Image (cartoon, rainbow, N blue to C red):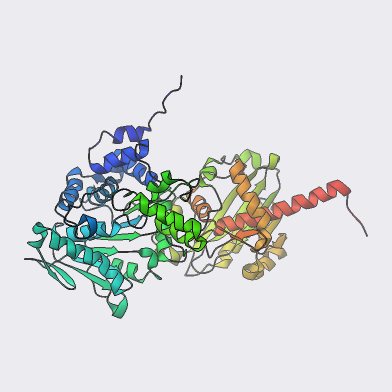
Length: 564
């Protein structure tokens, strides 16, 4: 007789903690009652886990404040199309976003989340939701002289959420009595708060004291100017909110991709940020929206409400009949980043790799790879032990210029320093003398057979090490690393890479992406990687030398040594 799978303890306990719409939605998603994509499932798991354990971090969920935002949305009326004059009926997925943002509190009683990244398919009502949030900040949040901005790179784009908010005020008698409407401003009657559209045209983003910023269609922003200007304006506010809404994009060099990638890594728990909320719609890897309608709701949680199946069927029909339109449909309607990068390593497999047994490291061949960073880059020495049965053990020693720790405060460098996973070199750039001494010590200590380096960056250092009897081998970081890149992925997938599971190396492993050449060969791609990958590059260099020596050994075993 088949047995039912047991619910995780955090799900069972969280389901009984409160009865807000956000928690009901999260439970429905996690139990499969509501179909959702991979990142939304993880966002719901995060909410439910935090209901059980976040009090240990000084966080709490306030059901009364969570309900207050939905009560406010009950006063809103929509003003156009088939919904004109109707109440804003908050859908379960919207309630999850709204109540998460306004219900979660920090230890000081202020709101937990300061940034919200929302990625959802076109036509799902994200801009009206943003407009409603702006009106809440204007009329119901209790912030003195609140400044609410709908911000974008162009005036036209910035006015979209503002116009939705203006029409809502006109359609909602309760709001009309509290808010004065003009062409470019919504003003709080009897107060100093206002809601305006602003753009980067004509320096319109400077000098703001931002309470809420609503940033629409982030994927259309060519730079991070709007995002950073709005964020800089929040410094004087006690509980500001930057609410970013977008479709999927196509350019991984944009601020949108950076925030998308950061959000997914946050949900994967490879980075940690209690002030960042994310709701990222996506289909699963094995879904094909051009074939199977069942997956559409994963990217379109408002399916059947603001966006109808017949519309999506028309889009799919056109995509199938006009190949140039296919990528647009996949991106805008089904949240597929059409030119997205693919991480080279399976993080679940990486986490499942065995730990290192120090006793197994005695008497086996050892190789090393050195990747030298420049100013803010990591520098890394990878030590790779070749174990029996095709297994390898990997440890890395990693350095960073001390000035970078303060300059890049969003990364958990302090925690990695405290745990001994990261070492500092003095100054604003990498001190190669410090690294050279450590590399020399490590190569002698472990009897390294070969140290791989890239002469473009480490020529002088290699000369010094060579003079000390260390076998240094020039190993360019181009497609010459193809075999090692492929093999590293195989080792992780097969559970044959042993490592210590330290979070710094895991973070770098999660960032690794590969560039594909004309003939299908691959190499590490630092330019395309979402963040630093230097220690993993050093490991690939070491692995390439181990493979090369194994090939040499097999030739000698097959035919013996040739003499001339």
